[in-house]
Length: 303
Image (cartoon, rainbow, N blue to C red; front, side, top):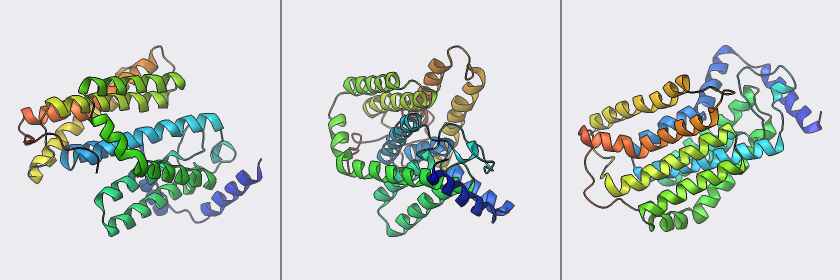
């Protein structure tokens, strides 16, 4: 066993000596904040009830991070701690390096904090980054080096967004809806062909669905995320039911992993979630009068 991994196991085993049921539950809670399902509800919450631009940035950043993380894990093929010793008290699949939870936590919460622009929120965001990452080591599903690599990569992606994100957004928004849809579909298809595995299928189909829906929504659906608090709560409840239905319900009835056509239907499922989030739900909210109509052109995403 490489010395670095051996040290990592010793570190996790030292942490295991202070585990308690209460502390286990707390760490499971923090790791849940970094789960895919949490972002699956956080993005619609922001898009439907807070601010469209922030939600789209968050969604696309998470999808890009997920794709890169999957590719790196499959290239590096580093084991998880529980592959080498019985130290896990949680479940995780796939390779370990880098930690997707740590990587996404830095990128997503750093991006949100940069938009909120409040000192106290930066403190909260940094604590979430640290605790989500640490929870993966505490639960024994990642080596400390996996988490450190995730933090570093997440920070690099965040800095890249600060450097080039606004320029890319301005260029894309200057295109017509047809070209925006073409870019979303072509990029998703290309990235999937480069690395056609299930986690990439989820990332690229979400990207395509979000991109298609956003292009059409900004042109044809004058949705506004403003409105009274009760109205926002109601539309999130209605929209979230459909998100969960698409995500969980279709998973039950569509082919499972290992069955024929699993990957195409996985592409379909995640694509529908993205399309519903940016197009279907805003359209329905206007029809049900659960959201006000946008009175001016859609605001530019670039800050």
